[in-house]
Structures are given as C-alpha cells and as structure tokens.
Figure 1 (cartoon, rainbow, N blue to C red):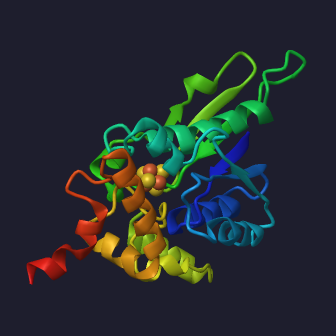
Figure 2 (figure 1 turned 60 degrees about the vertical axis):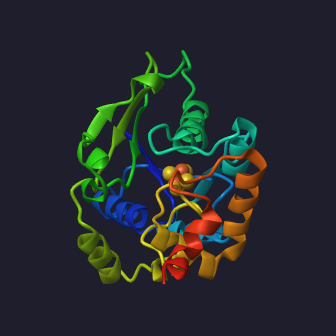
Length: 238
Ligand code: SF4
C-alpha cells in the first residue's frame, strides 16, 4: 500500500499529514498539492515548508489548460456550489492524472499497487461532507493493474480536535487563519460576506481581480450580488 496525501496547506490537511506520519511511519507517502492558479501568494512555499517537517517532498500539480480565473473567463461564468467545476477540473482531475502517471498500468508489474488517496475532509464542515463514506473504491482509477481507494481519515474530527492536535505538535497555522476560517482560494465560492470583507482588508487585489472578471463576463461569482457590493454592504446599511 502507498498513500497519496492530498495537501492544501490548511489546518485539516496538516493535521491529517501529521496523523498519517505518526500512525503509518513505514508506509510510502506522496504528498500532492493541486494548484488552482488562484491560491494565496505563498501557499505553495508554505506547504513545502510544512511537508518538509515530515521529511517529505511536495508534488505540485496543475491543470495545464486553465486556472480558476481563466476558466471563468472562458466559460463566461464562475463555478457554482452545485457544480463545483473548480474542484473537479483544477483539483481532483490533476491529482488523478498524477496518480495515473505515477502508477501506469504496466503488464510487467508483478503485483498491482494499492494506492490510498487521503483527504482531510471533516463531517463537521457541512452536511454533504457528513454524508461521505470514510473509505470508497475509486473505480475511475482502478484497473487490472492498479487499485485506488479514497480515504477520509479525519472525517470524524472536530475543529477543536484539529487545532489541539496541531498545537500539541507545534505545527503552525497559516497567517490567513487570523482573519479567515478556511485556507481556501484567495476568494472562494463558499465565502460569506464576512469573509469577503476580511479579504478586502487583507488582499484587496483579489477582490479587484474578481470584480474585473465579473464585469468582463457579466456574471457574478456570488448569486447574492457583485463582489464590490458585497464587501461594502454593511457600510451601506448603517
Ligand atoms: S477553494 Fe473554493 S474556489 Fe477554490 S477550488 Fe475549492 S471550492 Fe473552488
């Protein structure tokens, strides 16, 4: 068995990485980060640093044809919560391609490798995550000479547990947690207005980029309004 550890640089994937290294010290591990092209400026360097603490190397994968912003421009719309094309095309797809290339289905392979792709999803985060199984066979990548499973090893962990686990081990949180709940894309489709106001304060260029694209394509990232209106909404209400 070999582990593919899907890593974002956020608290959950860091806790998962630490736990897997402690629990399965002798199992080969490959840490993979999918870069959407819309990550925080230092996300990759930060992630390399965390992964290096465990003596591992970070593999960064990308969709060669698009980033989150170019995808919105090409399609004339941003990804939505129901059809998260950002996750399928920019995260899951590139990681699957990496797995296919790393373990091609060679006839000469004496034993088909068993690959377990680990994700740091937690049930507490949303009802859809709460409904996810802990372990599923990833049929799309399986064949006669390759067996792949999806595993959510920290599915039952709470945020309090995650933070305590990291603190006990002296593992740092990215500074973005000082003003945001999640270490996601610079502006993520799941952000609340409160999050957007925090981004406007700490990364105003990200708001400006989304606002420009919204005007260009005539489509807003959030159904509830244009981003520039959302970030000033409370001031208007006063
Ligand atoms: S962090 Fe948000 S915007 Fe980025 S890929 Fe994930 S769901 Fe999409």
